[in-house]
Amino acid sequence: MKNLITRRGALMSGIAMAGSLAAPAILQAQAAPTTNRRNISSFSTQNWQDHFDDLGVATIVADTGSRALHYWNSTGDDYRVYPTSIPISEELTKRGYTKIVRKKVGPDWTPTASMMARFPEYRYMPPGPDNPLGTHAMYLSWPAYIIHGTHDTRKIGRPSSDGCIGLYNEMIAQLFEISPIGTQVRII
Image (cartoon, rainbow, N blue to C red; front, side, top):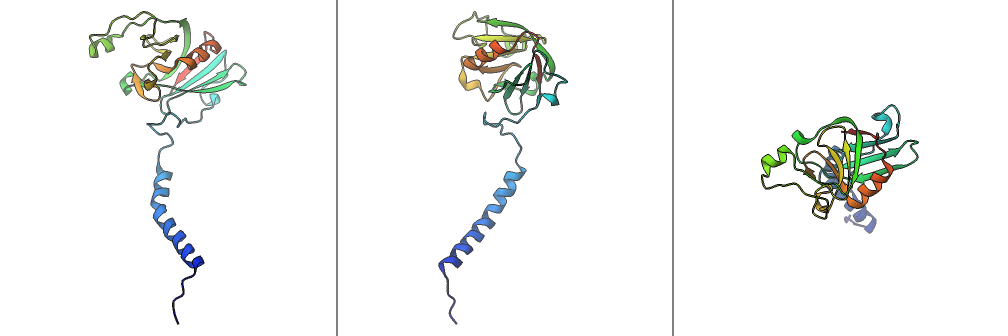
């Protein structure tokens, strides 16, 4: 008797073969980390309850792993997520609890000692379009750590700061308006 190949048989055979070829890719995808280190859209979900006992006047969780800043207002009915830049190295990444102690529209910038050691040409910069702090800055209780904007949009989604959390200027302006002094912050 002849071996007859029907369209249905060929299709089923092709699907089985494709499935066996795809199996290693599926297994690899399942083993992949939950955050993608190169993609700003790979936010990990955060719940404020995992970090604080209450929302206080407002709450921010800056997730350096997924390069996102999570914001909740005091009642929890306003939740927002913003893409961020993060520190360029682990040594410059400070993690823990802090709060917003001061806010400024049009901040000026003075390089830190660690910046000056690496880039001796850096100098004080007044507010303006070339200022690394962008249009708005929210100063944390830790010295020299700031949540701020940036005019260099290439920095968002990348390790590019000396410890600060950077946002697009449009987004820091929005966050600035809704985050009162005393907003509790956790950097993870």
